[in-house]
Image (tube, rainbow, N blue to C red; front, side):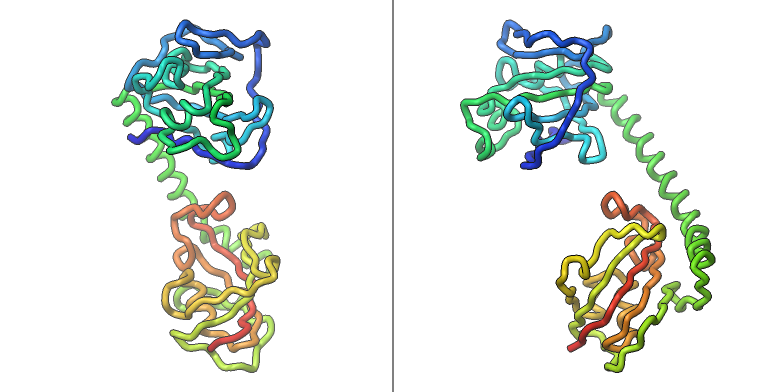
Length: 293
């Protein structure tokens, strides 16, 4: 397993550790500066254990520039021998399950030694310190980690299986709620013509120019060229877009406006595409075929 990659972002965010200890920072013999907000009794992790953590980076002290919770998943980091006295691995070995704490590190050492970066980020002075807030959820030995990840994979697979089984039910409900009786194409694509254009039907290999707004079945917009004010171009029939688009636009006259109801097997299948498009999602596209050449 690779080391945790220490990500960098320029966005200023808020990260709160629920504090039960408002005391000042302390220092270990090695010079590690720390403050525990919540401290539990129990075993400490050892070298080669794998820790499941949430973390946030602050610079200056009151400004968070990255927090792992924004990624939607906790971080996993293998605890290695310290690269220098008072590094983050020493910090993690001080913690136990359920602890939360803040640590202060020299920016130069943290980024170039621990994070393996060739330089300190440009918005941080190398001689300054950064603060890292850590919540230790739990830690594992190698065997426990593999068992944990296998369970996570099984649970994710079960969620996907449930989503796949539910897709047709959600689509049927959407069609009923919107009084849509148009029969689907053989592929399962549903094309609702809202305004028929008087131009030609494009052929594979032509570059088409389109406007679109994409939503989920509940109406949540996930992308829109209309909102951006810039039409989208692609080559028809070359697999540059999802299959539902290649098929749908190949059946519209230039100038047409339509709604494409695209089941997941013609869209993104069993893959999540960001926080809005979940696996096995039927997607709705309001489209306009502007030109084909």
